[in-house]
Length: 271
Image 1 (cartoon, rainbow, N blue to C red):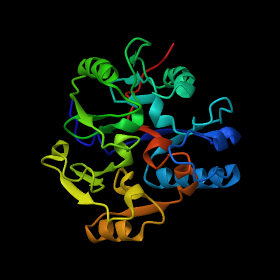
Image 2 (tube, rainbow, N blue to C red):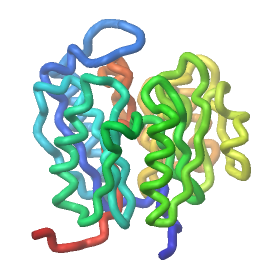
Image 3 (tube, helix red, strand yellow):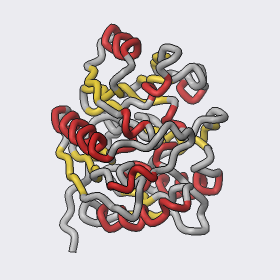
Image 4 (cartoon, rainbow, N blue to C red):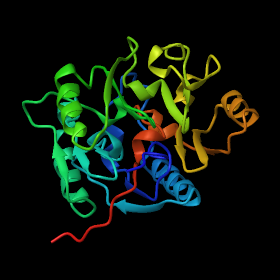
């Protein structure tokens, strides 16, 4: 099976509406609570951007019991052949994985799961490239979790590589994002990492580090608004950039990548 486009070409996405409880979401640096009303408006703009990029978006209702549940990417990893239900490192998010398992049963026949004795893995630490699945070891993803994930995706022919997330950085993808089939956007903390050997690396201008958490969806780069130097850098390099409002998400450590699960499911008829 060809893996061309695996990292950036998608037909489907899953998102979840922000809950009112998002004001109690986890955050490494407390800069105030997000506005639920504005978060909902921003989320609608995010969904519209995905749709304009050519993706069918399935929107699921808010989960009030889980303040961080708008960040659906942390709970699962999706490939054409199947999905892995992850085990987020924050205890308050464990229940999200169980709910995501039920959701993905509508899309996949083959679902693997990180068990309770298999460590922790957050989707925010996983960057899928054309050649490998890069997994950052962090406060939310440990070596045991990486080992379990590596074994589970090997059955589908995917190679996982462990990366050390820079100290003080919450998630691997806090500091990097895929912007094309063989290109990444990264902060100065990661731009020289050997994990990106053979790839084009654009370094985010100093002072705009949050912009690194960008995503490539088909032929569009979705970039957090408010980072004009990064937007100019990308456009000058020939990328089609769509800026989206993520200020509310950023207050609870979120960005473009974590608010959707983007994938290409193999059609099947569930029982």
